[in-house]
Amino acid sequence: MSQVPDFQLEADLLAGGCLSVAGVDEVGRGPLAGPVTAAAVRLDPARIPGGLQDSKRLTAARREALFTALLDCADVSVAHASIDEIDRLNILRAAHLAMERAVAGLPETPAHVLVDGNMIPRGLTCAATAVVKGDARCLSIAAASIVAKVTRDRIMVDLAQQFPGYGWERNMGYPSAHHRAALKTLGVTPYHRRSFAPVHNILYQEKSISD
Image (cartoon, rainbow, N blue to C red; front, side, top):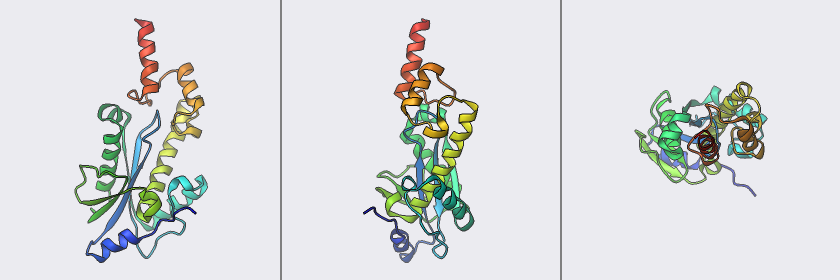
């Protein structure tokens, strides 16, 4: 039986004197293309939408419905790290940068942030707790995972229209067999992450041939 996230971590912090608690999560570490996207969400304990869950366990339609509901009843902030930042900093630091930006973009700085994963981004300006598998345990992080996933998926669907043939509207930039094959036949776009091995190897091969 799959775990269902709850509001216990947030409730404990609020009961301990925290004035506000937000969850933060990111999506897009694994793709070969597109930005890494993070969201920070501060839920209103009296208006939590039903059915919040790790975004990976929800259908696209359910994610979209919850995304709309969250915009209506919670404080929500979304931020990104660009392809250039991913290649320059590395994907982990870029993901943390997106998280930091998302938290900074909330209407008010939360007293405490619950961060999905086992590391706390070093640039956060408030207290934070890392929560392993937080999107499956914590409602605020689950909400953030939904907002980040819907936002990034929309970006990739839009980019797919500008760069057809890679299947980004289906694979969202992840290294599916179709995407890898398209990289070899169509080449590298400005939205591909050049520091990632499959992309780097193609560029290196092209350079070797041209040399």
